[in-house]
Amino acid sequence: MTVSGSTLLVNLPITVVSTTPFFVMPPGLLALAAYLRKHDESVAILDLCVVRPWKADPNNPDGAALRAFEERLRSERSVFVGVSVMVAGQFRLAREVCKLTKKLMPGTITAVGGAHVSQFPHEILENCMEVDFVAMGEGEPQVLALARYSKTGTVPSSWPDGLAYRKADGEIVLSAKRSYIQDINTLPWPAYDLLRFEDYRHDTSTWHNPYKMDFGIRVPMITSRGCPFGCNFCSVSTCMGLRHRARRADRVADELQMLHEKYGVRYIAFFDANFAEDALRVISLCDEIRRRNLKILLDLPTGLPVRVAADDMIDALASAGLIRTCISVESGDTRIRNDVMGKNITEDDIFRMVAAVRRHPQIFLLTDFVLGMPEDTTESLEASCHLIDRLETDDIALSIATPYPGTKLYQQCVRDNLFLPDIDQSRLWEADWYTHANVNRFTIKPYKLDVDTLTTYRDRILALRVQKFSLYRNRMKDQFGVSF
Image (cartoon, rainbow, N blue to C red; front, side, top):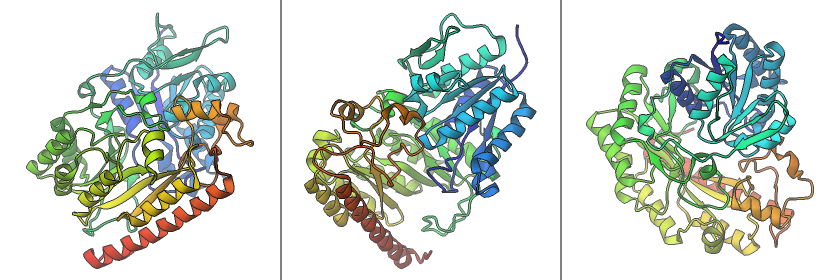
């Protein structure tokens, strides 16, 4: 029997592992909502970040978020609730959202999706009866199937791949993600109208701002999917596929123009895992931005590929409004960086990329490093510190080597028993701290290093980060008259 109702997609704050208030619109949920509407499904988005639960109830931010969710659920009367769980720190709250859904509306279908839960579908379904489905990886077909099932109650003859669920007898069924949307130009624009842009306005007085502009709303965009590279610690390809699939430059420019003219957007952050993989596409997009006279600023938080010949592309990006980017170096040791991690970049490549960016003083450059790979030694970590010291970069993003299921690093750590004794591998799915961005604890022990040594090098690199940022502030004051 068909019932009335709609889909409610929920975005969660990360109050456990991050206190930053600088959240952005959830690009993944905006894309899923647009896909559902394209197929005549009713959908709403609840972004619990805009509630600012860390301010609403500092002693119990999860409680504030759950109260906001309950109010919305009662008003929406949704028959399907899908919760985005991109990082480990969101899972505890996601589970509470699903529990509350089942308590208030027992017949409502619940699902979780996103990078974190895509790694642990069996564990989640085995331990969390309040979760009915886990969507793995690129999620449009799975979410559409669930939206239709939640209304009709009719089990489809076959579920799309990338979906995990329990059968009536309790058996857990996992259908690995195998197929991806090959031409993402066929997808509709994100459903921006489902959110209030003003909810995402922040105090930007401490942001990198060489032109002393009013940034307005920083809007995220994703213009490509997939990763063809084999970095041994990265799980992007397991979620989004190995093939790089990109939207045409003119279609991206059309969306930029709409955001600029309809919503007054002046600051765009490209969240693609590999935005600049196709340099000609990037240059073409920059040409379109200039041709259309779009007065916008560009931010590449996921960075530029060091292996790509970059001069022309970086010049084009700078002329189109780029003010912030990063590069992923990961290690100062050539063997660790290339033979172990699989980066396949030379030190000359790194310095050539930095030099190309530095021709444009308005661009803030962040450089990524990873600490604690199994093969790390005091020599390799010294090499990282030495390279950081020599690099003309504005900031350092330090990650702790973290083995995610599905990666070569995870397989190696299981095989060689590298997890620290206090780590319960069977409970990683619910561990709030289980993310490479958490520099406060280690997950694995390198073959030839102890945790005390790792801690010493972590602190050295963080101290170098302070030095780099101090030099950056001096540069901004000297070249642009910007102080903060």
